[in-house]
Image 1 (cartoon, one colour):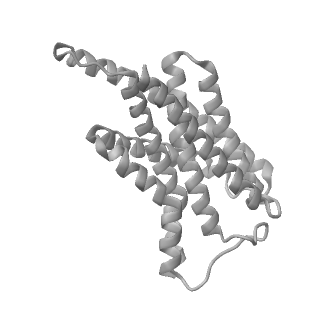
Image 2: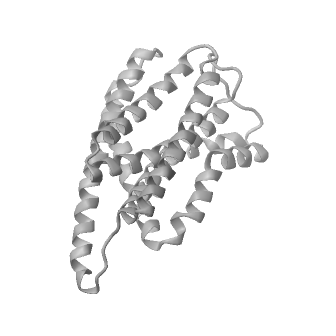
Image 3: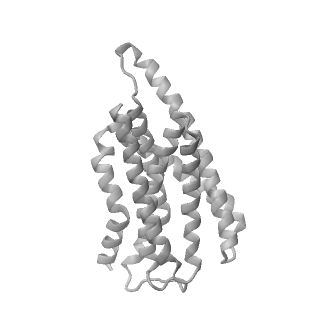
Length: 238
């Protein structure tokens, strides 16, 4: 039904759209960087899915899916490091070009760029894993899985989109802050939290597991948002 479509759309994507309008859209450079980031991560996910194409269909067990998630997160973390190196090189090039005007990128500017990279990562996941299935909600019925009869798969998808939207955006900022400040704890925490959030989705295989996974992931996303705001606040106050 249309009301289901729009309700799920605004639940899963509404906060991300609001964030884009309030924060990202204020600076055209961040808009372009977010769009480029979305394209890069779409390519990464398409290549990753092509790699695993030879292993499907997987058995409907936690083990095979856990292996796939671990490999996928490892690939994404490697790409995250590559994006950091590319971002650092781009900033150095831009600074050398604008040195005559006295302009330099502050640490806060760099964190804003990291936020744009992370927003693109989150937007890519939203497109790949949620928006692509949303048109199915305009039908007369809905879909459930036996392990989680409490929520439809569309509601689960919307909540996952909301949670991972916060997590992926914030983890990019935390990781970039770790790379810039040579903070191994931040770099490691970003990778561990990404992997932990991905593996937490395996609770969907257990009866009622989605009811446990949803609040935990959303709480983790909110905590990471507060922590990331704290990082930016401290950086801007220096």
